[in-house]
Image (tube, rainbow, N blue to C red; front, side, top):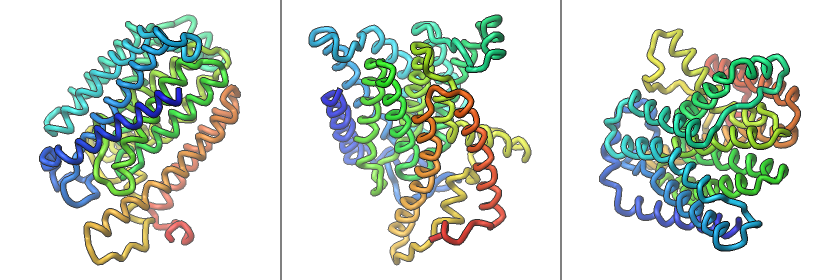
Length: 367
């Protein structure tokens, strides 16, 4: 598993270096007027291409090792790898096409992530066998299509949730890396080494991209990177619950509560204002932290000042993510505790959001 991680890391890092060196012309497609733009100059948004290459090479080599090497080490079935790649590719290629052209409409991208979800349900046979509560499990048994609908919603929606939090250097990439490692840890606890290998390889490919993304901001993940992380993590979360009865379905829910709730809350506040959910704005939680909490950057060069302020935003959200990841990893089989932490996060998020909007942030957070 270690050598697969090294392959994923170096392939992704080298591919990212190539993108930084030769793809700067494509960065000009990203308009200066974009509300979610918080950088100066033209930075390539093709980090997803590097992550995809790293993931693809490490997964295929892992499958080859299981076929011709030691089959007991990883137990990574070649057919499983090919199906996972088939699920990831529609979303990934659509996101990369959008990053290169800025012309792929939201409806088309939703269709492509929905196509990934459909392939997951049909090709991998993914379904949600339980929800962790007796009455919900009984409902799921009476209406199995609900489990399929939840899978389709998860694989379709989570890529867009990661795209929403992809606003600053190292933010979405580090959240994806942390979540992948947390899922891999629990997979190893229940003896699911194949799932752990897929996740660790994805985390390594993400780390290769982060070499160029944080703190220097020389490359962005773009829609392609966010969609890869979203699809892979959704597949792993559902598969882990489906394949291992001892894993609570609320474990991945708590792991992913930050991007999921950010998406739900974003839809709500836009609906209240009469704005379409597909319209980009600058009122997400991470953007408010950038505008109203991050302080103390007084460099004379404007681009350097923007970069430093950008870099100081992400660690706030990394800490916020760890507040959910740590209890999720500790109590991955305890449904009631996991549900309680999910509720606690929602309350904390809304309270923090309102405090920032009303300029009632404690002074120690602004330094």
